[in-house]
Length: 64
Image 1 (cartoon, helix red, strand yellow):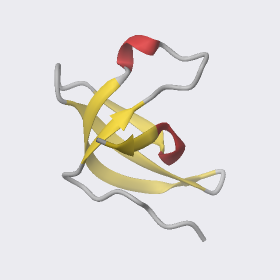
Image 2 (spheres, helix red, strand yellow):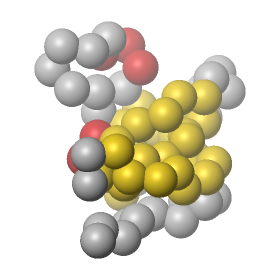
Image 3 (cartoon, one colour):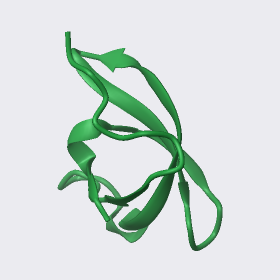
Image 4 (tube, helix red, strand yellow):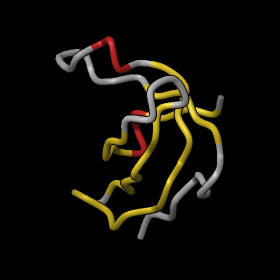
């Protein structure tokens, strides 16, 4: 069972997958941890620039 690498409040760098909108790339804050999808942890993150939130997979995130 995978465990989450990031904690709420932590800053992360979001890199969308190759076929997703690259304009969403940047620094985000972890809002909350979510259940796994396909055995990969998920998170709700919030953009530091415009406050938009999105749900992402852990493999799309890196330490900021």
